[in-house]
Amino acid sequence: MAFAEEFRDNPSVVRLSFRISLYFFFIFGGLGVFFFYFQIFLKECGFTFQQIGTIQAIFPLVAMLAAPLWGMLADSSTDPRWVLRSLLFFGPLSFLLLMLSPSYQLCLLFAVLLGIFFQPIIPIHDSLALRAVHMYGGDYGGMRIWGSIGFVIPAFIMAMYWSKRDGEATDWTIPAIIFSGYAILTLLSSFWFPKVPPERKHGFSFEGFQLLRNRSFVVLLGSVFLGRWASSSMEGYQAIHFEALGVPLERIALYMSLGPLSEVVTMFYAQRWMAKYGAYRLMAIALGALVVRLLVTAEATNHTTLILIQLLHCLTFGLLYVVAILTINQLANDRIRSSAQTIGVIFCNYAARISGLISSGYLADQLGLPGLFRMGAWIAGAGLICWLLFFKETEATHLEGGVK
Picture 1 (cartoon, helix red, strand yellow):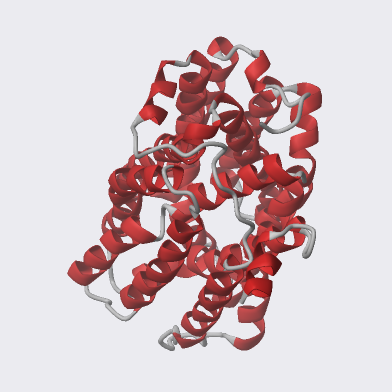
Picture 2 (spheres, one colour):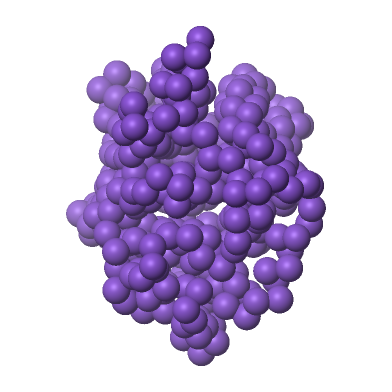
């Protein structure tokens, strides 16, 4: 037993990067199943665009209340890994129950549970991974790329073993089995996560919210909020848009998987680019690329064009995500790492997605999907202008001294 504990907690026994990379590979593999086909599952349940948007918006709405509590629990614990493991058990279970509950009322109920247990997983594991990098060394982007690689694997698996003929009802058994397998592997790999105690013990507090007084932090939240609001139109309805343009069901994930696959390069180099060029330039590039991606998605009907524009995902998510995570981490101190990442996720993910998914459902019903994507381009443009005008680089946002 003592050897097993040392094997898990001592990075000299098993390389830190391997353990965290393996965890990212499994957690985002499961998310790949969830992300690619969930909106089509809801559509086949007979729900309207507005109902689909409402169900998807429930996740971040509930998580806005639940995630800060999980973050503060992690910050106040001498071993915050137990928080992550609890979420990894109850979160996937909630999703499987939702897939067995095709009625609108039951979907709303289990969407609440997903908001409580599934949505807060990412800010918790990001804060633990960054804390491990600070304590033991390593490159967050180099580890996180394995999440991107893992994210696209289910697309290839399902393309080989899962198909649907015209007029035939979709059998969702294979996606459910694949998701369950990933959920089990993720939970098991979390026991290999390195121990990352805080530098000094402290209690449960709301200290993390004091970051809202920091101008750099607030401008970051506002700009990324608008960018994520805009990209929610693709998140919520891009698969349906591809299906309407004649893309076969089993190939939709293959087309969409090019986006996450492309982000491997930007995530790998993002930490180095942050040290060399700073957050200001990199975030401006990411938001500008989002404007272009939305406009092309709105106007293009050629499958080749739709496939190629997916490659901009390396900037619109891969670069944007890592720059935001690293900047928040640099602005926070050891006492509030998990809380700071959770606050960032509340504004840049949960609140943005609530706004985006609910408004997207209405706009899709009124303007059609191309009109929805055009409106998203305007919103992303507003985020870019906000960033260019108001964000100022400071020593706290640079990485010359390494990740704090």
